[in-house]
Length: 288
Ligand SMILES: Nc1ncnc2c1ncn2[C@@H]1O[C@H](COP(=O)(O)OP(=O)(O)OP(=O)(O)O)[C@@H](O)[C@H]1O
Ligand SMILES: [Mg+2]
Image (cartoon, rainbow, N blue to C red; front, side, top):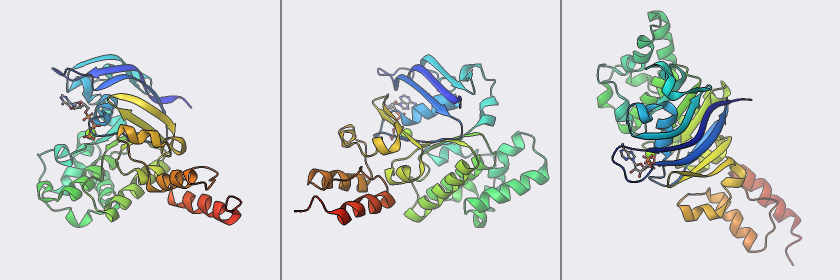
């Protein structure tokens, strides 16, 4: 399958910045895949998202070399507003996403559809579905600014889901959610993946990336230091030196291997852990 998003030798720096926020990044992202983006604070995750969405450089200015292509076309060649039809973007800070011109959550979620000229009946149906899906139906009549951070995150996600974009760029959607809220957001994202959306998700909760993503992109100081199979990347302890977290089960797997328990491979999810460690325990050929 062809790449839906492509970065060719991209280097970007914000205005007046001494250092590049993104350095020499080349990536090909395929349609319908779910990419998890990880890396320590300041490694360039949000900037990568902004480049894909076209906010950098068109909104942030700064300087870009190389090219970012969405559906084969450079982001710089899209007309204003055109990329927002293709890419839904959930901001890291949900507060930044509130339009400020709508009085209720319902209207806020409907805002994008209104802008795209969707008929009123259809808007209503789609908004009802989106608020139900994100668990905020009960908040529909509230003012967006009265919501908690976690509720705003759900509203931000609803505002994007309602537009049904082909690509979803989601920057830390669960930072203000409790574990239950986090699980439910991942369920929603999983639903989007089942509907063949291409998903780029920045998330520090690596256990959930291990569970749900197809592939992983690791950033360090603006560079992509790993890209590809989540099993290989999320079990690689050398990444700890770059401030990247690994799933607890992968850390345990590495420790067991070092202490002489030969595991078939390092597990990255609980389910894999049960199977792989369970198998090693059952055979116990290593146990004298
Ligand atoms: N608007 C901006 N103007 C100038 N520099 C910026 C701006 N936004 C980010 N930066 C710088 O660019 C680099 C990458 O920042 P970015 O926000 O992309 O990192 P991040 O990986 O998303 O971090 P976090 O995990 O804290 O969200 C950092 O050095 C940061 O200070
Ligand atoms: Mg960020």
